[in-house]
Length: 165
Image (tube, rainbow, N blue to C red):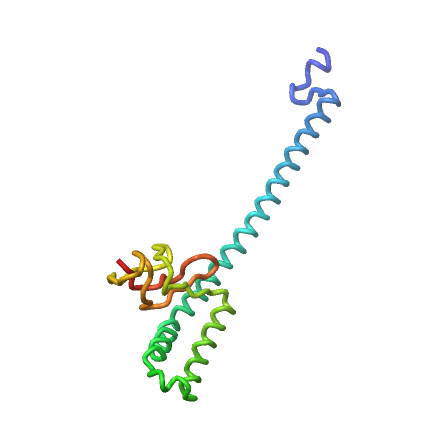
């Protein structure tokens, strides 16, 4: 019997160029998988940062919304002060507090939704009632019942308004 005939099939010599080609193919496959893993990791980091920012924005908006009834009540109180008392120091103090509240909202990139005299926009306003008023176009906001707020381009609290019919 010949020595070559006695060797098992898996120990037979493979041509060197085929071995090199197989190794190059395997190396390319591993390199491609590594590149894909790096890209997946970068995408995961970006998504985690976006999610973290959304959580922070949600927490800030919820905290601010807890204080908005105070803001509305201060505005409502000033609105009912007789004209002859508007120059009193305590009234100026209350209006200054309202201004401070508005400045604090700006620090958190929160905008107050414009209302009175504006056209009704169902994405920003919630109509609590309608009222007929001569000389005013239909769907024009006549009165603000509760302030509305926008943060990061998203409405976090729609304004409650009275609309002309």
